[in-house]
Amino acid sequence: MPVHSRMVHKRNKHGELTDIAVPYSPNGECIFITQRTTIGNRLMLALCKEPNAKVFFGHKLVACDLNAKTAAFECIQPRDENNLGLAEGMTANEPHSERVKSKRTTGFDFIIGADGAHSLLRQQMMRQSNMDYQQSYIDALWCDFFMPPNLDGNHSLDPTFLHVWPNKESVFIALPDVGGSSRGGMVAPVADFRRLAQHPEELEAYFSRQFSGVVPNLMSAEVAKEQFLHREHLSLVSIRCGRFGFGDSCVLLGDSSHTMVPFYGMGMNTGLEDVRIFFEEFIDPAHREASYDTFCPASVNQAYTEYRRPDVQAMTDIAAEHFDELKTGVPSKTSIPRKFFEWNLQKHAPALDFISFYSRVVFGHERFSVVKRKDRYQKILFNAFLSSLCLVGLFAMAV
Image (tube, rainbow, N blue to C red; front, top):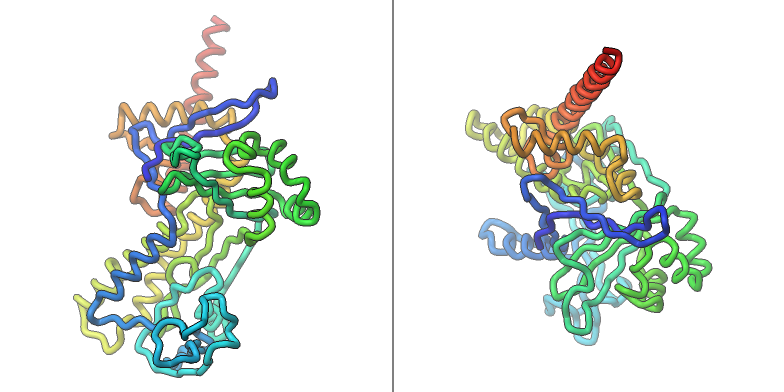
């Protein structure tokens, strides 16, 4: 679904609830919102149609010898081995004890770890190599909420906006979804989550105080309490890795090599870009230029790490820093003049390449490390411009 602006719902200095629209681009560009599961399901269906691909479900990596190129998997199957789905009488929620477990060890030429933030392949790499690794948490948790459509089946919020309820240390974000429903996320300090979990009767007052209008306009207090108590409260972590590959044995792509907080909405985009860059700019050229005995030579793997690492680490920092803006809801007073300046140049003098930071990150195709460097340069130029205006003004007053 296309979304052109952020709609900020916050109280003004008089205590009145106001709505402030913050466009994403001066040129009418928009972001598109969809569910991760939708993309994942479509990719899985496309993979199953590939003639040279075999898909194995119920296989969990438990060990991997990257030097010998062997991997051990724990295989979980229904008791009825003749049934490719669930055995008769079983449900998807049956405990693992009701299923047959076995182990399978296989050799491989090259293994790609795209197994997420808690990557098992990354753990194996860390045990078998000198690999720098860093993870940092912010003092907040995330809880998902589902908001049903109105009685007439339409969205209870304007679906052309991403909606934000900021409140200094917490924020509620709502995204339009198909079928008239909306998905939301509450981000609040860990202490707030713990207190509300112990005293859920305070949740309605908390929403009224922090996110005015969400309860009961989008969901009832009972529904909000039910979802808060039964949905997982997720930690918000950033992960940085010093290397993405191990010799000619494996490479980490996506969240397994870099995990970022969700506030910029660029986690999956960055992971998909990993795949494109790894194959289009490293694997494919290497195979065209020379003949190798292995799928990915160690030199190519190392070159990919050195090229990609500064960009994904820059994007990880950008996502974490964006949390501060979301909590306030709008750009700070000091950044508003700069944004006005950049947007006018971006719209009326594009040849100057004076583009806003958000547009470069979300709508551009530059490397993230280059985006950060250009942003620092633009900030210096803008500050120099402001200083010049002040000097001119002082001189005029003196004359």
